[in-house]
Length: 268
Length: 222
Image (tube, rainbow over all chains, first blue to last red):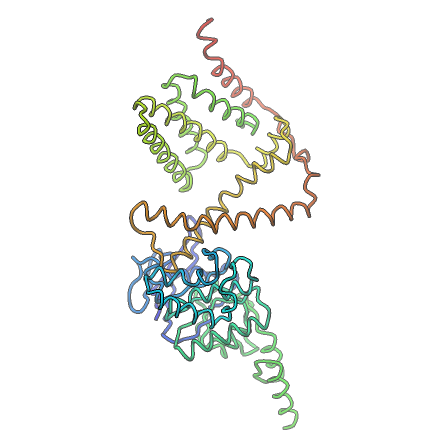
């Protein structure tokens, strides 16, 4: 569980980036954190992981104030996947890269092997275990970033724009996997994204930030009803939601749209 | 009163040579002058951190010299000279745009523009390198590695991130080289920039530098 209480943050000598944010993310939730560039999404997520500490206010992880914690203290509870996968690669093989975290936690080699194998299988990287990680494609590097976080078996996973640079199939696979671990293992997912469609299809709760303020916190159906004007927050309705709304439908994809439209035409 | 990058470069070069011939009192005075100048130009956190880092580095230099059987006086003088030289470069970087330094090197010192570009690019990469190192240390920390503890543990944590940083720097330089070729690098000789004419300030500073550089001559014959 993550909770923020009146959290404020500003970079050195800069304008405030986060203003009085109060929010609570319960265990097992699948939350999408949305907002335009510079709205404070990444900053807020970094506060969750103690990568930075607020100027005022408190951040709690599992009921514990993390003001005096550093990321290493939270690593086995909160996993963080960074925007840029290149900066995370420290080892010479994919296997060692994923094993780096569990080894830091001084787990037995047997346990390390078990957790690494599980994380690699989950992200479809088992066949790449001996590969030099820098030669992986961008999408594979992103999956490696997720595997690295999963290897520590966190209860909360924060993913910063992980679908960027992935093709649609890779995106779908990754999101289905995240949905599976969320539903089956109860891992809390906090997904920072610009992709409205992904937020609409996969998240069960959407938080919107605008200029450092929390402006929306509800279920995606409320936000993506196709008619709500999101431009004032620098966002847009997903194309399918807008199209479906024109026909007074609630379709989430093209097949769904066709089916609903046919049904409606049949009724008439 | 402004001085051009050319004059600043000459002054810095002169200071690096002068620290070896001027008496220790004058060298100390130059250090104070540099500090005042630097804090006048920029007094942000980064500048303070840079001054702090240079002071620590000087302390280490002095300790090293003492370890190798040098006397305290010689070690202190060596440290002072090093500090004055590096501080002069810090003043240059704080006061001048990198493009102006490149232009001065090409126009006044007749350095081939490829070399001038190499020099200025190396300087430009430093902040990028620092940002990348912070990001890599963060990634390391998120994987359970705590760099809290003694100096050796902290040093080790930096050693772990050196390799990814170097790999990234190589990749970046490859991309930069390619994009430079695509933009027709080589055609630009920095001569399309506005020429930096020497003004009153330049002549004044250059005169002082000339007098100080020939200080022994004046002492002997006047």
